[in-house]
Image 1 (cartoon, chains in turn red, brown):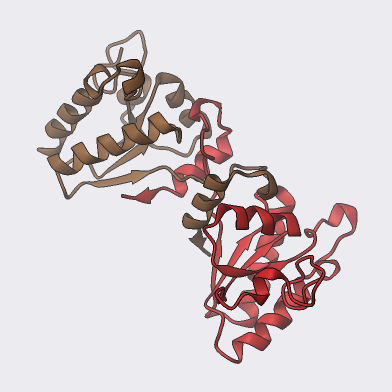
Image 2: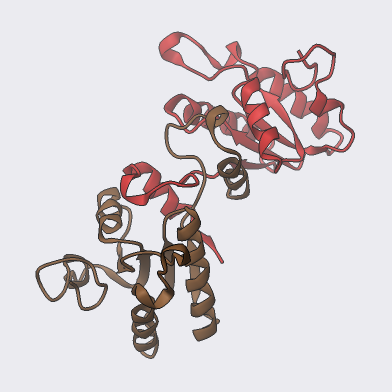
Length: 149
Length: 149
């Protein structure tokens, strides 16, 4: 497991963290290692990751300390002293547990450093979708998340 | 068919256009009447609509003048003189034809009035989606469309 981002790998640092070309100032927080692969395939992201290895899920007795949230806080504390981190992108899944985990992390991060830029990945209509078959919540979010031309 | 927005109905004006509570300053441009129903179900939208009844689709010989784009331009010209329209939301489907239609409409609208606020509905991950199964384009757009907390 990578010593920095807890991505799965056979070496001490994962391929992303070991790459000097990546932007260490942007950290994308994902649920698991497969999400890292998905983002890497999209070829749009040049920052680094932090893998939580799960979500906060009280019904299954998984609390914040059972996944890699404390490690994220520690990592940020260490890098912040060197003024490195510019943005945290919370990319947990848009499910009930994922949203709850995102909210918990945002609260913790804001308490630790209220200046930090924290963003949530866009939610709305996926490519190829049809509006008439989209659910109400997705449509509502697509309206909220509209962007100007 | 509604005389203003070309939504389907049995009266001269559709239920939305006839409702004095709706905000006439925001027009949501949709592909067909079923999209209006979908947005109405989401209960998040308080503006009015414009139904195109199709998309620009050159492969099937459907040009901009075969759908209700000229009527949209005319409607805007008429209402703009009275300073009414504040925003146009382009809500065609995020498919190839839908995006092409959106681009065409934006170009026409900008040529007619460069001051007009034109927005596109948010594209990204739908509710309940899993990042590891999302396609590359959707993930790329979810990253682009991220919003600050």
